[in-house]
Image (cartoon, rainbow, N blue to C red; front, side, top):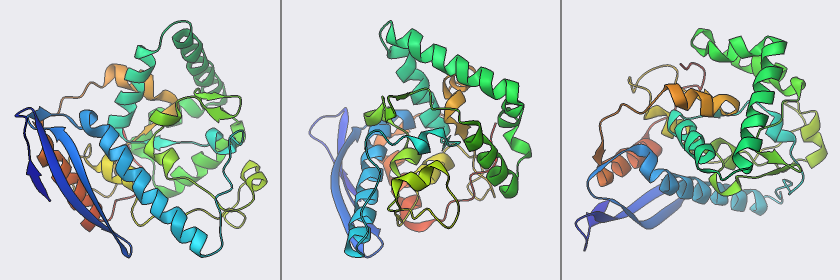
Length: 261
């Protein structure tokens, strides 16, 4: 990885990442000065898309094609774990929406929260620090059966597709789309990716890099979480942030996405 710039405010970074049997190379532009992770989130999304595309190509080589299509929103009723930086971006996204769209989305967020509260699941989602891996699976299953639609799901399609969380980008299936309405470990075939970008991103928000669990936020409560959890990390040079991201993508296995705040 090398960096150069013709503008003191920006740095052009040449990066190379081995993904499975592929080597991915790119020239990325990041702020040269003090930067927070949220500012380079679009770059991280592009990296995730590139890695997912490689997984799709590998699946196609095996004769498997992605069955996800517009109008198939079953997966948008799953419990979606996202990194803390993405939760803050989702909060920004909602705050930036013009009216009446913002009011409509906030009403859907409130409706989902009410549904979770009435089911007793909201308290569980707010107390993720007590979870273990088995709890994560059990609550995820219960959540799906509640049928709580993502507040950004409109006409069974994602209304924030360009800004959708990396978890969503990384979830593609090659099994029949109708299986997603009643998923089991045996009837869902997912596209494999060489690395999970969303967990790598979440690790940036986990103070202990060797922690057994990473911190995360349920997408459905991301905007309200973001309001009470401002980013208090110290800004760092953009190339340094990008370097650390690529080092973790290339060389470290993510801990399980279980606990949070």
